[in-house]
Structure formats: structure tokens, C-alpha cells
Image 1 (cartoon, helix red, strand yellow):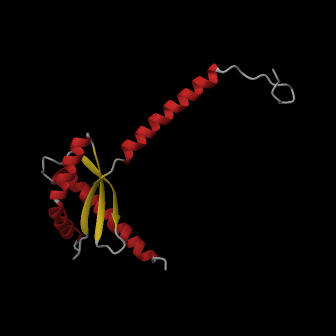
Image 2 (cartoon, rainbow, N blue to C red; image 1 turned 180 degrees about the vertical axis):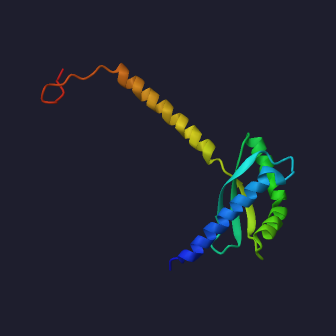
Image 3 (cartoon, rainbow, N blue to C red; image 1 turned 90 degrees about the vertical axis):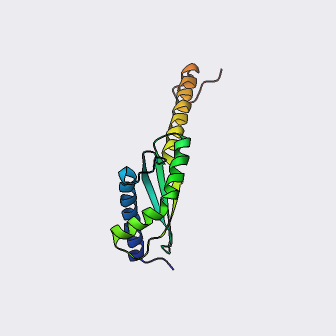
Length: 141
């Protein structure tokens, strides 16, 4: 049975609110030195609303990503209590943090595709053009 539109809409609104509020906390409210400059890229709420996975992109290297993830995991209870107070709800889902590397992977894929295109252009430029007859059929050598 498909889920009702109202539930999906509500879940999306809650996920957007979590994203905004946690993003605001990442900008300056969390004073843990392990947390590097970062931002929330996506919040995935479980269908029952009992848990949420927050994807965070970190500006920095893998070491900073690991320390940020550790700091956020440590601050999870504080973040939940702040969300409860700000949103005025009784239940805040269990939060799980994950590092979002999709932007770095996209950049790497773009770089590889650009290299491939450049190689293909060089290969096409170095090949002698095939002579064709007026009918559009390649000439036999």
C-alpha cells in the first residue's frame, strides 16, 4: 500500500527543519574543537520516524572528516535536546551522522571524464581523415 501524501510531506518538512537547525548548530553553536567547518547535505528520516541519518560534508581532509564525525557523535545527545526545545516536539529521532563524500567524488569523476575527452580529441586529431566518395561511402584503399 503506498504511503499517504500527507505523511511524506510531513517527513520531508521534518527533515528540512532538522537540516536547517543542525546546520545552524554546525555554524557556531557547537564549540567542540574536533568539529571542522562543515554543513548538512541531506537528512534521511526512517519511515517510522524513529531514526534519522544526517549526511555532513566537511571542508578538509580525511583526518578532519574523522574528527568531525567523532565530535558530532559525541554531541548527539546535546543536538537532540536542542532540536526538541527548538521544534517543540516530544520525540526527536535517534541521530546518526555520516560523512558525505559525494561532492568530492563528483569532482573526481568530472576530472576523469575531462581527461578522457581530451585523449579522444587528440586521438581524433592524429588520425588521418577517411576519404569518402560523393555518395557518402568510404573509399577503398
